[in-house]
View 1 (tube, rainbow, N blue to C red):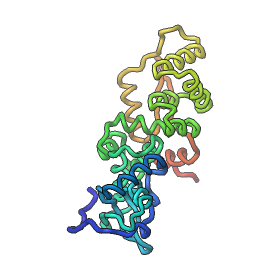
View 2 (view 1 turned 180 degrees about the vertical axis):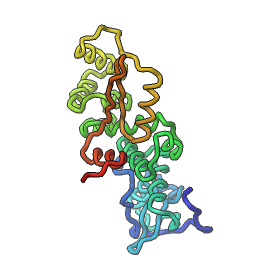
View 3 (view 1 turned 60 degrees about the vertical axis):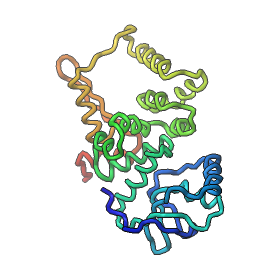
View 4 (view 1 turned 180 degrees about the horizontal axis):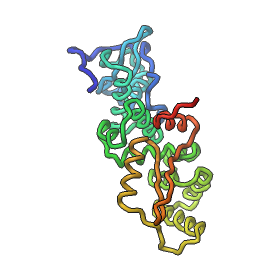
Length: 270
């Protein structure tokens, strides 16, 4: 729950007393769509109030940054707002994130980073995260996979040059292959299925296996991988031979993520 609003929540607040919150998930604003919204606000005003909380210097923006920016472009001096001084730091972050997700106003990488941050704040599994933001576990897992992408490829996803399906496949490759594979997708206009086939062919060539051969994982192993991934928040793979010998792999893509992973596993350096 995000607390209760005040009995008379809507107020007119001067736009120049408002500043974006430090934990805002959204970082990019398309100039053309912002201009369209500003034109609409000139004609009809701000239909839905933004959400703020009081600070010593004015008001911190929790939700509705795009409306606030467009209102400034439209020349408004005041904007309707709901002031929520009853929220904790984590509740304020959740409110802004959920509103942006419901409006689908975040870029794919912003969505992924926001979901990850929410999971870190509350130590949630992928399934629990999905319930918190009103999405499926698969939605959460697919977006969190984007955080494994090379930064250049993440930018291509944000700009719409790569679909989420492409990004999901590329995220499963070694980091050194990300940029070249993304360039191949764009240059050859590959569909997701075509990309999957190319990746499978390269893997067969690298391992010397025959076409159509794919070592099968038991349902128990696949379930274990999903549950471990949800538990620690990082992609996990488990493999074993017929004798029971195998390995457990946990993927991270920065030293900072490794530190967070080790902390979650209970490791403390001496």
